[in-house]
Image 1: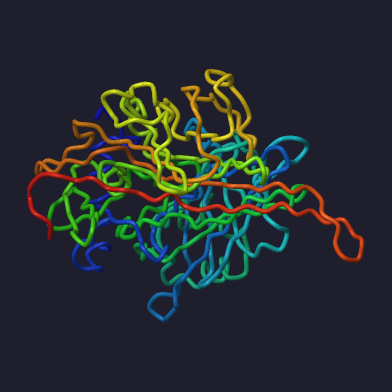
Image 2 (image 1 turned 135 degrees about the vertical axis):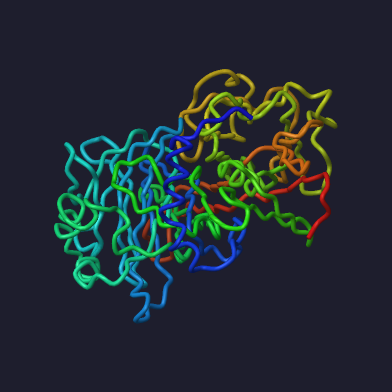
Length: 462
């Protein structure tokens, strides 16, 4: 894979060297992996939407029990990306122990913004004109995209900074960056991260009466070094999953498949992140039943895509299969990949892809708003005029005969880094209650798409 790293390699070495002493306090290196309980050091929220009456609520929580040696205040990096992967928000966020930060992604004056409530009780800092300032709202670059939050470190022994975070004295934190302790050294009074954050998001449409909630995907053991950097710095990000240890400047990934767990050592941290997110297949339910006014769309995100600029997301063998509820395959899907090159719904240069199950073949090749979320997207499905069941399961297969990511050990990963979320909505418009009052009766559901993982090659499973 061709790739780039935002931080020059010599500077990466320097950063690791500066943090080696603090990182060593946490013992042996633990491998990067997806957190099965949703608590980790890096969170990925696969979708926000701010259009056609939809707003998105983002929440992040600290899950640390403070003690005298570790007060528990947490420094976070908030990154908001548009659908092309461009960063529109790059800010520092500071949480007290067991604190919860909430923000709405909504429209102000017709333009998409991130907005904190007035009584948020936390501090969000950005760089403006060379100075660090606290803010309560920020413009967004697009009406849809995704959000990432990285744990940069935990606050150390500074009582003044502890009080500033606990009491949301945001000007004091800004002063620490502009002329205080963090201006001299950004890691002063900071301890390594412990992987203590979790989060969720909700897409809400008040007018339609719909509410879609999902948990953020959490990466466990993302980093054991301090990465407390100035707001506006492009790092930390997914390419800085650093863990100095017995392997030197490497990152270890861990992926479990059917009870077998594989650990691999990577020279480039972004390859380790890609490995834990690799999916050979994505599968989920759908409904387009006209009797229920049903609609389904899927959103598939590859958050590593911006770090592989010369890689085309998807491949000519990416394809779709559909089954009805009786398990019968639809007539327009056949065994793939070789004889089905036309099924390329996930082939795109963009990190975020939308698949709308309610479009017609006449819309293929056109840019249309998706049926539920109203996301403008090029329609790629269906591509064949053939009967498709109104309800059932669908599967996108992303792997092919050749491996897409190969570890130096020889282990091969097939597919693409992918996080999938499915949305289904049933529109009943207005119903009359027994007391004669009309009430909106729309409802829907959101769920994570199921991932199938394909890994082959020596060495054997752990």
